[in-house]
Length: 138
Ligand code: ADP
Ligand code: MG
Image 1: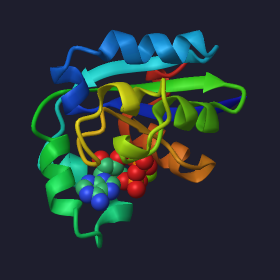
Image 2: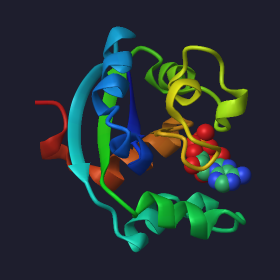
Image 3: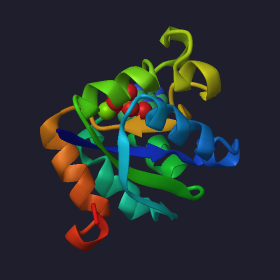
Image 4: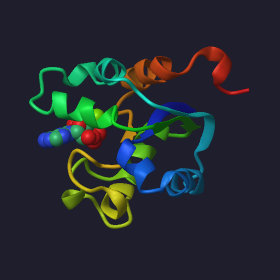
């Protein structure tokens, strides 16, 4: 069993595809063990994406991630991290495979609808960034 963090990004909330994203995860057999809708401040977004702070798109990315509400969730299941990455599709929707969330809903490489942790270490950091022990599982 593995856990991962996913986010329906501000463009996904604006496009009204929260349920669609969640449904695709559930259909793959993953279980949602924590879930909430929050509005990040610029500083919250900077803290979450701290690994990207030297990247040229950091300012724009953190503006985007703090412009409207997001839905954050913890997903649990076998190979949850790679499963979520596969369902999401490539970062750039133009390179994303048919049937993936980003292929179907993303606007561009930045506004790409969904986030998923990329390793057990980042999943651990990201889950703890948004949720405390009381909010997970149950
Ligand atoms: P992923 O979300 O697929 O793991 P990265 O970790 O590389 O992708 O990047 C984090 C997020 O930063 C992306 O999901 C996207 O929103 C944004 N991003 C990545 N590359 C670019 C880029 N070249 N220009 C603008 N935004 C980008
Ligand atoms: Mg990433």
